[in-house]
Length: 394
Ligand SMILES: *Cc1c(COP(=O)(O)O)cnc(C)c1O
Image 1 (cartoon, protein in one colour):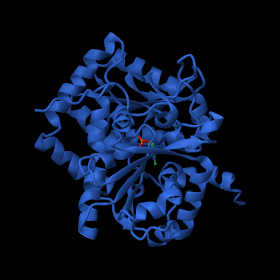
Image 2: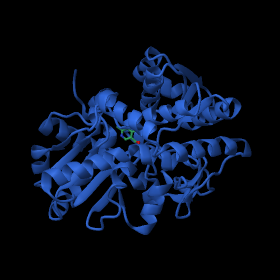
Image 3: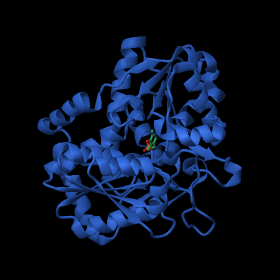
């Protein structure tokens, strides 16, 4: 059995207190044992089909393609997954894994609440106790998701420390895990954190790229010329990219948040302008100030508002296999409106970043063949923010 990957080039690893190492070892051992186990795979695949709604369509967006000067533009419709985004692929897989490990309790941290909702959903499905840590300020900003989590039977624990946002909620979740590790599994929501999490999450999201590959071959009889995805922590992107990394003819583009603009310092572009360092147990590119303190990230989309990035993306950046770009809030909003107006699809603001790069490069990409964009989620959650930013009267 192949060992679960710990490092991607120099990136990744485990920069955690000694007390967490045993728990990470237990998780890595369990995953190594179960990842190819027919019983585990069968149960997961069954649920991805009947419960999540997979495979999600690969949809040819003709009018949006025309607007961007792209003849063959395809959207991978993760927005049609149960709960509205790709996050359920990971949450469900990890909760299944936890059950097989004999854990009875699930914990998670959440910023915007999307990962909390996905985790609460999976825990409810299996009748497991679920506790989600969330900053007090984030709870106020994301009231609807707090209500959803509570309706799904989860306890939402407010974190007052620090700025009342994700960073301190994560610290609290880790503290809980260390104290209760015997019966508790900690579900991390992106391809970040100490090993083995980045590998497990990427593996669970790989279904996005595997389906896309099969679908584009059936539709076009060839691989895409270009594949594009947005990068927050990097889970939807790595899930899409992994299926194409060995195909040198496929150009791969990851899109980060440039927020108000790279020059303003208010952005989330860790790969574009960050430096390598340690955050949340892993060595990777991250936003730091001159003293090496982790800097605050800014983006109109909560899912891209993270100062770090998954370690495999750092490696793919340095090897040059993937090109990373950053688009501003304004560019993302423009792509959001255009997609609403041409396709009858309201995309998540995160996914709108991936689309926005087409306004810059669509014509050039078109020359290389079909373009596939991962539409990581739907934008229902973003309508208040987007309508305010776009000046839509109600
Ligand atoms: C959370 C989220 C993201 C960002 O997370 P990744 O781990 O980078 O994929 C992107 N899109 C949507 C819709 C999200 O909810």
